[in-house]
Length: 96
Image (cartoon, rainbow, N blue to C red; front, side):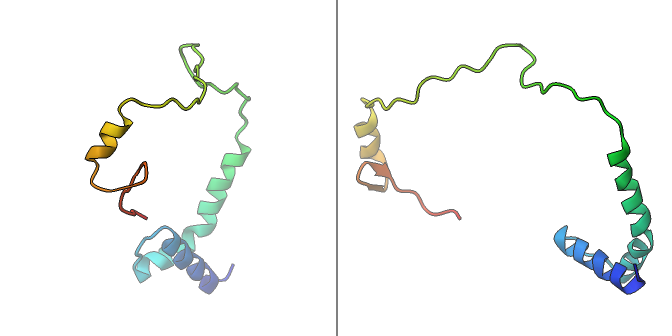
């Protein structure tokens, strides 16, 4: 890879990672990028034996109740005190 394309790659990676690099850092990382990629590539060479997934250490499985609608005796009282509502739903400000 040519030096200019390596520096372009470093700048692109800096943008993706939201890092601000000095010109000196860009040059330094451009020189080191091949070694960095080789080092990261060694991870795929690691031999590991497959292990079963562990979701819990206690052995207790998660029990889920059926999702059944049940009328609440408190719903009307709660809706009476909310600042804004639409029908039987609480209205909240947009956050996204």
